[in-house]
Each structure stands twice: as structure tokens, then as C-alpha cells.
Length: 449
Image (cartoon, rainbow, N blue to C red; front, side):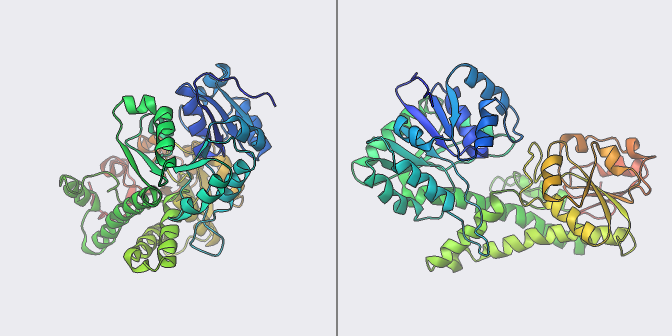
């Protein structure tokens, strides 16, 4: 393999070219570094090397192509060569939920660090970005030190759909460093890597390993708690006749609370929040501090109840049974501007209704292919009108812009019954009702405006 030439004084490898790793590699090349992306998946490496992003992320493919053409970015499966070439190595592999457990599976992190250590250039810095349980960095540092390197931890805070912006213009940088003389050396290297960002006065928090590991899981736990709080209030609104959208608006004016992540609906999914809060709770149990985060179990339960509520609502609107009824599901990704279907609430609802006997057709602007691979028994359409054709009820479950702006009149003569369930509380009830539709939403009364 021909290794890249050097432009800046630091050569960077990024181990793992999934969502996090590919984005990080592209953005570091955009900052001017010579970057080598490393992955064991030869197919993924080939696609990236051909300037093709294997997932949907706005703006990323253009930057990938630009930096490959500029000669700053390349990809390889040769971990040994990358380890010997690089000065800084970012570990960006996944930490999925362990099968049969709430805990994180660290298999990929361990393998990545061991592969680097086998050929590590003395004095180089290995930087963990993967989300890991507290105590992982201390354990991995032993392997890196034995190979003549230094370990640091630099958690990621990417939002899918905004990953390029969050990498190039983050709201903060966090660096966890080892004790002793290795700490300042690793800090100096990472300050050089992130110099452009630091010149923008982006806050930098330099801390210890444990705090750096906790920042990401604590942030996700807080966001999950806020989302589930307003969804719990939606449950109360449903039994009192209150309107959770108006309740949320009123709460958001309190500067101590704010309105972000205070939108009631179907709940959260994806590859981070659900598995991270479970892993956080599992690790706290291992450390004897499970009571401190016991509330996360209820957060998870509330989130799952919102999914079931949509299923129940569909049954109610169709006279108590969905058997042989046609249901259109608008949305398959766990959130808009993404093709990520991991733990997708929309697909959970769709498949649950299918298993209850409904004929379910899904449409998502970006995630149809991924959804079809994971849920082949569902039907798929290439547009919202195609999905809604002949439907007895339409479920709006992922808040893509095209769904929020959809003209209810466009579906008027397509559906069998004009019934829509707004699982994200982002449609205009007055507009849909004026077009003759029965509009229902989570946490809102039938007369909601």
C-alpha cells in the first residue's frame, strides 16, 4: 500500500470508518491533515476510496470527494501500515449493546487498540472517541503504554444529520488525559490537531479519563431524560385533556428549562441514546452505584410506552382491530436527515402492526433500503402518496421536512379513510382537519389547534 504524503506535521489515522469514523476522517482532512481511514471491511473501504459515503449524511460526500481529490485523504484495510505511519490514531469503532445484557460490547474497541499497539510508532498518541463505560481508558492505557504510545480520550458529540457541522464547529471539545508527563504531551498534540477549532474560541475542557468517559453518557442520559419527561407529561395530558404541545411551549419560556428536546412524540431511537443509557446503568451497577441512575430504567420504559401508544391508537381508530387493514407509515429512519434505522421507533411501530395482521407500507426519503433489509416483511413505497394509496390510516412517525409540509389535499382521493396520526406533533392540526381529516396526536386532545 502506498501511504499518503505528509502535509502538516502530524499524520492522522482514523480506525473505524462507520458513521463516526468516516465523518471524523473527512473533517480532519478538511482541516488540512493527511488522513488515513482504516477499516477491516474491505467493501466499506472501497466505497469510501471511490468517494462514496455508505450512509446518508448531508454534506459529507462532497467533502469526501474534495479531500480525496486533494490528496489529503485515503483509506486502507492495512492496520499495521497505518499504525506504523500515523502520529495520532483516533479510535472510532462502535460499542453496541452486548447481546443478552444492557452493557456495552467493547470487542471492537479492544481489537482496534490491540491492532494499533502491535505496530505503533513510539511516542504516538492513541485517542479514543468511541463511547465507553468509565474505567475503559485506564484499562486500555496499559496496552498503549506497553507499545510505547500515549492514550487520551476525546468523546464525540455528533448529531446525525448535522455531523459535519458538529465536527468542524462543535459546541465544546473534551480531552481526557493520563496522569504524569504523558498527559501534557498528549494535550499538546491534540491542541495542534484542533488548532483551527480552538482559534474559533470553542471551549476546551481538559480533564481526567473518567470524566471524559462520563461526559458523553451523562449528556445522552440528560437528553433522554428530558425527552422522556415531556413524553410522560403527554401521558398525563391524554388522561386530563391537556395539550402537551402548549404545555411544552409554556415550559420552554423558563430559561432554566428551555425548549430544546422538549417535543413530545414517539420518543427517541438510534444507535446512541437507547444503548448508552442502558450501558450507563449497567456500569453503575457494576460499580455499586446503580441506585444513582436507577431512574434511567424508567426513562427507557417511558420511551417504549410511547411506541406502544401509537400502536394502540391505530387499533382504536380502526374499530379495535388492524387485521387486514391498510396502514401507511411515513418514516423509517429514527430521525430525519438520516438513513439510520437502528432502534427506529417508526419501524418498531410498523412491524408491530404488521405482526398484528395489518398490511403496512413504509416510505422514508432516505432509509427505505436499510429498512427493507432489516424488515423484509413490510411493504415499501417510493413516495408518501404511493404509501398512502388505499390506506385506512396514515401514521406520521419521522418528522422529515417533506412530511411536515405535505399538502393533505394531495392525499384526499388516494386514501380509503382520511385518518392521520401525528406521532411527532409537527403537523398543523387545523390544516389537516380543514381538509376533512380525522387528526390525532400523542398528548393532544381531539380539538387541538
